[in-house]
Image 1 (cartoon, rainbow, N blue to C red):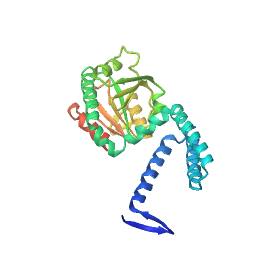
Image 2 (image 1 turned 60 degrees about the vertical axis):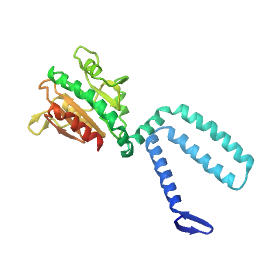
Image 3 (image 1 turned 120 degrees about the vertical axis):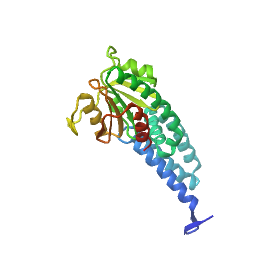
Length: 255
């Protein structure tokens, strides 16, 4: 086994380096998911207990080690029960990494099939729509402005939501994989009122506004013209043909 360096009688090998890098990556991901929440304080307490348990075990303080491990077991169970939303968020962030996207492509394609089929009918009937595809950032604040659904994506459901007689048709729907998380969500309006030579309506400004603030793709269907647009990273792509929509979305979601 390749030894990188020695500190006294301790050898630091390539496997140790990989081990440290993986642990650092995991801790960094957990911190990113839990920062700005009360869960991070509990997590730091948990890590501190783990650190002290290693020390007491190393110096063979059996009673103290037993007490710390008992507390750790109770604390860990309590942490999982109390902070399920934050843990779910951490898992979502982790599964949105490039490694997992390779395995999620079939599910993305299935979701896009339903969305594109719905978009085709919305365009033909001149019904406006806003559909948000979050990427690496959490959009919980936007979700909180709407009505929670947690329903599987389907053409029929999307058409029902954006039907002008539906109480949910105003605002946007937020997707998470194959799930419509919420409907009637309010998006922040962009200060940009004109793009290229086109004056922007409320839907386009709302889609553009969200894309300026978070890493999300927003599909916009105009009620007035029946045209399809995509807002991403503070930019608009206008007048997308329906036959090119799926490829455009798949390319952006795979980046």
